[in-house]
Each structure stands twice: as structure tokens, then as C-alpha cells.
Image 1: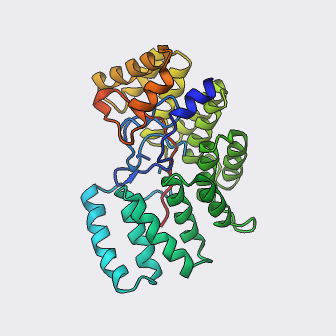
Image 2 (image 1 turned 135 degrees about the horizontal axis):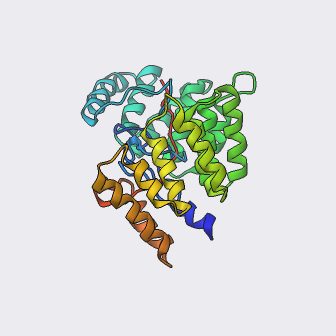
Length: 299
């Protein structure tokens, strides 16, 4: 029951990013299902991504207006020549940042036919499949986006978030551990691993991993948001609220914790959380949060 409860909170947009990038999509990742992103799927970058964009390789945050301008710029070049690799890749990236998932997938589906050996393109395609709920296909494509001799921790992290969404938490954790061998201490991967451990009911270990991620100088608000979630799941609401205040004003932090308390005390918490926190972009002001994996941007 606990695992099902948590899984129900996993965001559909598993690969979060900043406004402009869904991880979420910066809000506060909390949903008890491990994909609650309080400040909204950052356009694909939001709270903690149980599947997401932080870390040394993350793309600087951009506004929705910036991404719209990027989309318009690359769309012209793409329309002039759909086989232009850079045009397709960057146009799709801008579309994904704007949450235009179906269009993103259409662009990438065409692009991978022309650039079938382009691992970066395959990685983007795999993420897009996951964004559109095609998890089995996403898992298969992401597995082809890197090789044992040339492993990519970003692809592995994305693949782990897909495995978590498929309910294969033990496999997801093995994938995250493989990613950490390539990028030791990478907060993006640690955050996703922490959420995966929570989904497996290993809350003390999840807390330990998330604290390690939060202690990293390259971590961001999404990592703390995921830690807030795990503290709340253990009933440590005062600690959760204190931590939440690092990224929210007192009223918002109180509302977030109140939502967690209310969610966990309801017999129909699964339905309530699914309806209240998994609609895509909950508002921080309402206290609704969805915990989420952190999506690492490419390119």
C-alpha cells in the first residue's frame, strides 16, 4: 500500500526541468508519490525529479519567453531543412521546455530516422517518449543511447527515472548506482536515487542520500524539496517545514506541510493526491506539491 501510495504521486512528466524545462519543472518537490513538484514542473525542471536539472552540466535557467524565442528561431531553420541535425535537436529542446510534448516527439521521431546513430538525439528521443507516457519504449531507446564503453551518466539517470515510473525500483537503483560510478556525488543522480529509495520504503536511507545531495555545493532547491517530502513521509513535519522555508515564504512552507499532513491522514489519500497534486503544474500557493525526479538537460 505504501509503495502504491508513493507511486501515485510520481509525476507524469518524469523528467523535470526549470520553467522552461519541466524538473520541474522550482518549487518544492513533495507529493507523496515521489513526484510532487511544488513550484511546478519547471517547464521541465521542477522539484526533485524522481526522474530531471541540476549540477555542473545543467543548462542555465531560462524564462518561458526565452524558450519561445528559441523555438521560433530554430523552427525556421528546421522548416527550411528538417534533416538539419542541430535544428531538429534544438527545436525539440525548446518545444520540450515549453511542455509541447506531442510536437517535441514528432520532431524527434523524424530526426532519429535520419540520425539513428546520434546518441544525444536518441537520449532526447527517449526522454520525449517518457514525457508522453510511452515508458516501455523510452526504456528501450534510452538503453541504446549509451554503450558500456561510452557510458553517459545523464542517460543512465534518465533511464533510472523511467524504471521507477515502471515500478522497477530495484533496477532503477542499480542504474543510479552505475551513474554515480561515472559521476560520483552528482546531486541530480543522488536526488533521484533518494526518491527511488523512498518508493521502496527505505526512508532512512532515502533521507541519508538526499542529505548528501543537499550538502553538495552544486545542488539546488529541488533536492531540498525532495528531502522535505521524505521528512514528511516520516512524520517529521517541523523539520520538513523548517527546510521548506529555505525556498518558500513561511505561509507557503506551512501550506506545503499542511498538505502533506492532510494527504497522509486521509483514507483516500491515493485519490486525493492524484487529483490534487498530479495534474501537471500545481501552484505553490495552494500547498499542493508533487515530488519529482530531476531531469538533466542535454546540449
